[in-house]
Image 1 (tube, rainbow, N blue to C red):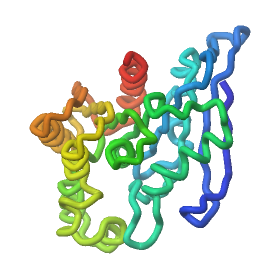
Image 2 (cartoon, rainbow, N blue to C red; image 1 turned 180 degrees about the vertical axis):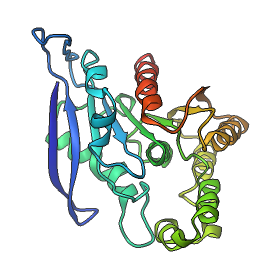
Image 3 (cartoon, rainbow, N blue to C red; image 1 turned 45 degrees about the horizontal axis):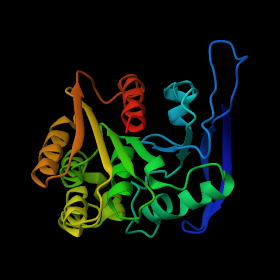
Length: 263
């Protein structure tokens, strides 16, 4: 595998930003690890970070490079600061960057990445899980599947909890999403996006979610999975013992990769 740290300019964000990238490499002489490359263009995973993380965290907290080494899969890990994968009210268009600009930039930089949406997965933890489902549901057709690990899938409930627990942060949340009343039923609400997608008759992306039973987002996940079922949307929903921690996500990302590639 090749690990690259890429500094580049985003027209959408109007600034320089970063991403970590893992590219497949065929190897046979590495001790304890074999690298593979698929015939033709290779699939890619866009791995999205959580609130307190950055574009380096997936490589630092998990063995993602080792997990994909024999799969022939590229991994894109972009930086979004605390932007919540959203076109924020304060003017930074992180949703447009992730959903529309970044896939094209990656295909330009790395022409061997597949241009078939079926070969592109968005996945993430916590805030990144929210961003992954959002990228797949919003209708841009760049992502054929999405996986959320401990995802903030009921954003209205998450924002209500944040505001109650940390009232001093209200200005921050308003800067991201707008007022509390405006979030539910908006394009930032995954429940709303899923309903719109279902009603449109457009093919649904494949959806996966895992959450630990000790996670503070567990109940929100259960409610979201039930809501998706009520809409007639299939979700591969899994739960087990576990909390909002990287030891859990390091284990679960392996199941995500298997689920995605076994289509």
